[in-house]
Length: 118
Picture 1 (spheres, rainbow, N blue to C red):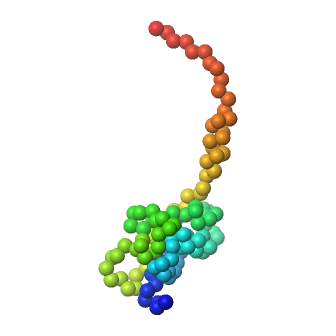
Picture 2: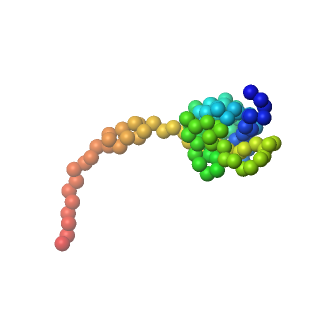
Picture 3: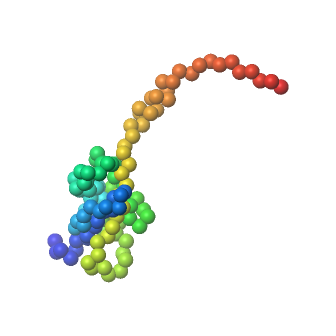
């Protein structure tokens, strides 16, 4: 694939630092991009994603779907041949919903007496 067809992306983290830039084919999926971000994640950060599912990519104010391609998500800004597109990375740890729901269900409900004064 000719190098001119590749899209250069860099990723802005929560603390303002960047990962990249990396070059991707327009046919690469966002899921593949997220996997590379997890692999390239700096080891010295306090918040670290466990998997690609823990990451949300935001471009032009929209959260990108894993099934979309990089070419579909790129917003045309005119002819910017040497510019890298910056996407924001949000880490949102997966929370096991079954555990929290189970805690609510396990709380014993007490029968209470209520008085009402009229």
